[in-house]
Length: 283
Image: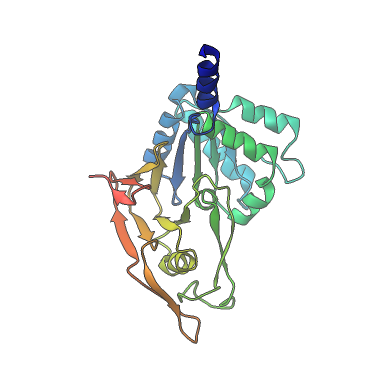
C-alpha cells in the first residue's frame, strides 16, 4: 500500500499540471528606448551579472546599431555582445554556445518579418525560450516588440497597397498578420503607436481576431511582463489596451468596412499595472 501511495505521489508531482515552469520577464518597448528603459532592462537581467545577446537581424544597418546597443548595455555594467546570422547559419554551434552563455536577449528594431524568417523553426529560437523559461529576460524594441506575440502585425497593407497614407481604414483583409515568436499567446502587440497613429491597424486586426486583445505601446515607453501574467508600464508615454473579447455584433458593410459594439479601451500611463488574465488595471 505504501508503495502504491508513493507511486501516486510521484506521478502527481511529475505530471504537467503540477510541474510549474519558471518564466522570466519580457521587456517590450514601443520603439526609441530611453535611458530609463535600458537601465531597467539591465537591472532585471542582473546588473553586473547580466549577460546579454543583442540580435539585430531586423535592421537595415545591423552591425552599426548592434555596436551602439552593446556599448549602452556595457556602459551600464552588463556584459553584452551581438549575434548576427542568417536562416542558414542560425543553428551553427558557435551561435548556440553564445546563447548558452547568456541570461538575457534583446531584439533590435527594423522589419519584424526578417526576424521571424531568420529565427522561426530554429534551435537558436528555442535557446531564447530556454533563457526565458529559466528565469531570464527577453526584450525587444519596435520590430523586436512586434515579434513577441503569436499573431504578429507585419506592417504591410494587403488592400490599400498604393495608399499614400498607411492604414486609413478599418476594413477586413487589409492588415497582414503572420506568425510571431509567441512569448505572448493571447495578445497582438503593436508599437510606435500614438506617434505613428496606428489605431486603425490594431483595431482592424483585433476585429478579425476577437479572441485576442491588443497591447499598443507608444515610443519611449515599455511594458515589463512578469511571470504571473501581469505587466507594468514604464517610460514617457502611454500604452493602450484594446479588448474585443466581450464585443458584440461584429459586422461588415458592402465596402469591407468593419464594425464592432462594446470593444473596451484602456489607456495606461507610467506606473500603471495590468493583469492580462482579468484584463483589468491593478489598483
